[in-house]
Image (cartoon, rainbow, N blue to C red; front, side, top):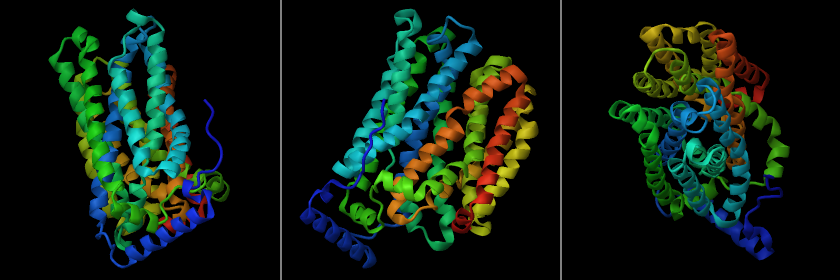
Length: 458
């Protein structure tokens, strides 16, 4: 698949008169915003609701697939290899979404510029929901052979392309409308979707694992969370469309210059910001998978712990992570986001040196690992969206933040479960810790060498 090339200027710019119309509309929108919004005032708290709904639905999809990658796909899709190899194959397919996501962003930025944010979001979320629901109907290897893996890969790529298009700009709009002294607080709001999505997804799988026999779970029980994910996507779609397609929000997006900019121009002028923005949150993105997907795979493959029991521990960790994300907003407004990111990266580096070995320490070790890991993750991840969004001029923030986010997830998280499990299975858990350490060091280096990022985040 070849990524589309060209520019992404709004379609209205095709003629001089249309350009003049567009410019006049933007000027009027800005004037309306300055004068208290002719259509009505939109408060940051209202934007926050849309952000939380959108991010929770996306992360729920993410975790439903991630959990199935450990508990279902190795046995259903790769029964002809040992369980470890099957899980590694499953994680390889898992990474396809992160590779496809930047391509999705390029495709949907063009749709956004030509047809509008509402149309783009509708297509993207129906593609996401359709790809997720399709996984629920997937036959196993015993039924269609290697086509099971091929279809799973296609559906996973569909999810990745859709996630690239699901960027609605609400997080950037929230950051631009946040009060000066509460930017850390509003930066953490989009990140609440991760622990919320994990808690619900883990709870669903734990319920079916404990309520069904192993045969029934592998035959049909695992499919229900994917149906739930589709339903949640539909609800989230209408909730978000109700916001981004209204005249109030259209005016506010335009008044804040949150419109698609030309991708080529954005890359040429902001390539340094995009690269540094992708590496700045690397520690938190690497830890993200090291305390969610990887430990479930390790415990399932190498310990006597039942997966359902460990999912309960993950729910406990998710609650701790939720509290820590909220705490990150309070701390960032006191000490500065850059400082908090640096301190949390140093904490993750220290955590990587000893904590992974706790996964071999039974219930107590696993609980300590998960609680400590999620506490660190919440503090670091809670401000990672601020690191991505705050580095761009408003005219290029919409496109720049989308591209930076895609690159950050690809580098920091896309291959994390695969690499961590491969290293740990061959060299022990200490090697997985070394992988996590590399992410923490990358964050510290990125924050250290980019003075502009430091100035904007302080």
